[in-house]
Image 1 (cartoon, rainbow, N blue to C red):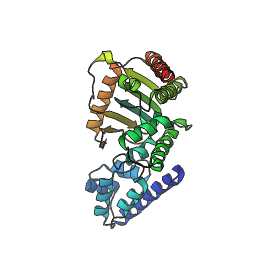
Image 2 (cartoon, rainbow, N blue to C red):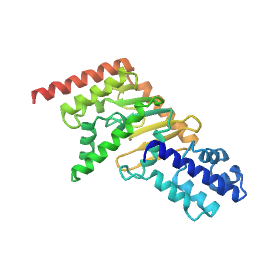
Image 3 (cartoon, rainbow, N blue to C red):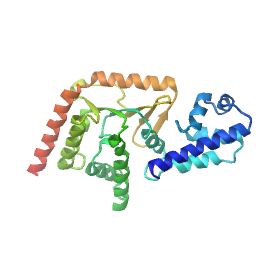
Length: 277
């Protein structure tokens, strides 16, 4: 579904929600109380500013006795077989975020991946899949990255661990290309990247990656991920805690200027290794 048609579909979701809520004689606050969100959230759903999570859509169906229509619309808009079920909603939120902050301890974040790197990551996790499947996954990842080229692109802040620079995912040539791509985006000021060096020792969030997203007219959300699962978080208290963790990660990291030099040096190391093989 194209970006414009997807937004139009979410606007229809909001219009239908407002119509059914008013038909039920409920205010936004009253419906919010029944589905355990604020009245302001209901208003944001109706204006297609914010997208509800699945459990909220299900509770709306229960509160309005709408025979599952909002759950079905949600699944039609959010579900994308190219993404794990726990990640599909994150992809949708990325498209409307005004600021994205990520911490990646092991692999380059998807929004920064080259095709060769994304192909290697996909194959490492799925060694027996078809070439068509791999190319579909690579295409999906590259499609996500188009938000960084939009005129209204989000601020994109990334903190990497040095592990990410040193592990030759896809081989040294592919890794050199990947790091050169990151360096190019940094020089073009498309993204801000810092690196936590090995010398820093222990660091916050050693368990997995973090993502924080901010929006124009909606509260921020956080997303955490381990190898086989991910969790989208919108509890203000928990999001605040994740933000603090990200701030601590940035304190432990090298400055962007030093990080750029380290990334360029690592790319050259991989390139030199590729030329000797």
